[in-house]
Image (cartoon, rainbow, N blue to C red; front, side, top):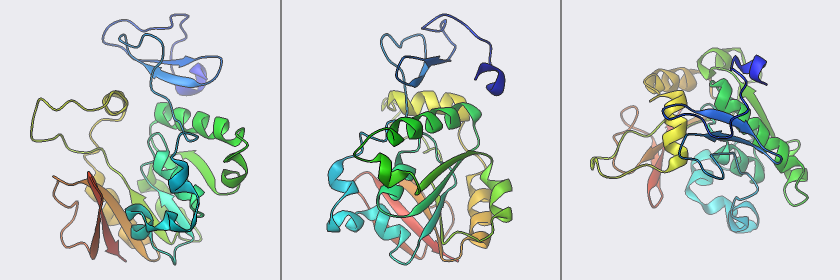
Length: 229
């Protein structure tokens, strides 16, 4: 794995200050900083709330409503740790998760590997979700058939209050992937590729990634802006 990702190999469980490490434990792959004592950040698909992954009311949540009932194939163009990709797959969509960071993609692949071994969700994910380490801007124009919907969840802009600290998982992922300054370009490409719609996840305090979304579905802390294609 170190050779594939172009990383040096170390026996240290915790990296020196100012550095990050991928740590392969007995059970999973973790991203750690020097403050990680017992565990770091990892992809956890089996922790998805059962109430949102099963039952007739599951597609009433804002994300599923934004993707739409007519969609079958969905590309998560900014998969990250894969939580939303897994959720959409468990809701019945055929999901291709694209993540351009090799490190974050490795975490996402490991999360899928462990989820497939879980009896409760493994059979439901096996033919519904695949993870690919690639830049969506390059891959999307080559997809045939084109996906019904494309989902974009760019790194959120900082909150207005500087004192509001992001969750550890977001902080470490941001250190690896940066701030997604090309998110607007990805949206423009996606609007040319998706057969029906592009959905963009935004925090409630942020401006739309592009003007005049067709419709918006509000959640508690985030919203989903839909752009018809």
